[in-house]
Image (cartoon, rainbow, N blue to C red):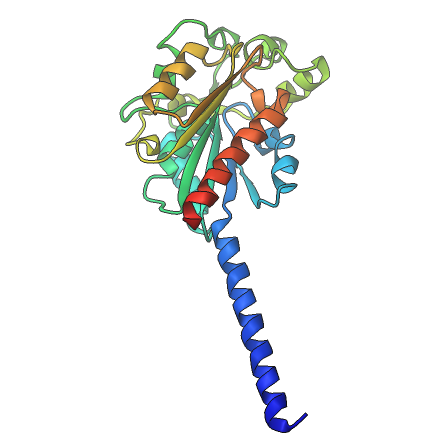
Length: 269
């Protein structure tokens, strides 16, 4: 082969590799990163049953450590993480984490979808506490332990370990309930009572999944929020408790994957 032919083949191979790399980079940019935000009385390990199912489908997953200090502060923290992620994001929130993601996503153009897993979707000026009390059926309040005073006049809230199961995790095995109760992370009273800003569900496609036996947030509140947000799809897991991602991880993962697939299709079109 002449020197000219060799150079031509090398150039052609380089062009092919460059095109392939560009295509793979473009493909990665269209595949969303899934960001999971836990709620009150929990930590990022509450997603442990869901994460492997998402990773098995090829998605990058980040389970954020939600500070649980204030809605505005927690939302700003999650928003700062979203800022570092290249490409589209599917943002998932459980319980109080739903209020957080609805505030954190505002102004972050890379967030393409929200998934509320037994999560709050407040209106502007509305708090998580407002939504709990909007309909009957919540029993979590009576299970709270005496508040732990903090400097500045606020309080940390815990659930009594002896009463953790019924309002929060009634469909988990006894051993799992004891572990969750012992490792719960407190939330401040101010976080529950702080009004939301303008929420992201008004501009982003939103999916909802929750249990029919949720005693922390009444199912009627979930239904109200899903209808108000004009949800893409709503799934009610019969008999599931508030921690539906722990008791029904396959169904929760499937819902998240549905949102991720819809996001990928929309980005590619």
